[in-house]
Image (cartoon, rainbow, N blue to C red; front, side):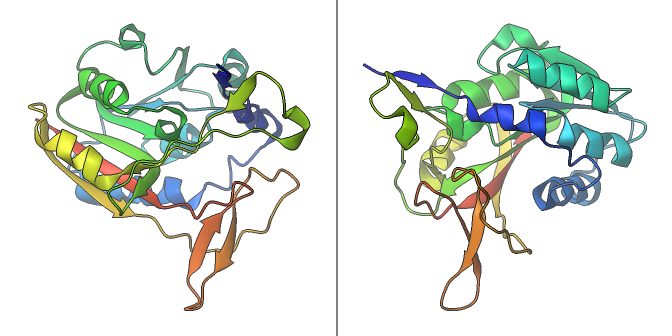
Length: 240
């Protein structure tokens, strides 16, 4: 059986986009400000913060909040500590419940992490565990409008024949997650907001990085070298 790994996140060590936040980051920040009805003096925790680009935007937009970042890779956390002052960073895995205290955060963020895993229950349960009553969990990932869950593993051609496969592009169906959330006693309400990119992205040298194409109607679709049309959505969960 091949080992499942995730090495692609090391790309964040080579990037510096702190002053040019992603559209999805700013959409989420706008949503927190306008819809979540929370005070400025809160705890916002980003689980899977990479090198802290989103945390940097959070710091600028919520100056009174306590901002935290967690990631499993030491080297990413070390870069984040240098690039983003006045933020607490921690090394830890989102599958480890002991990484964070119970009912700690008012806002728990998890962006681009869920597609790495073949199941979602443990991840969302941990996020619920770490979030205060009345708080919100925000998950950005790939969510299928069709009632089909898709598990994807891949390798670059240069690695063909090696005993490893890369993860990071699993797609959970909205129905599967909705059916589970409906019966979770810690969930007050939830919703999926579909994310539509408003700029064109050109292909990069790395074929795993995403770019945009337009369909016959002129609408942008996000794809990459895995031959995926990526169904990006943001899942908002209000804790009971």
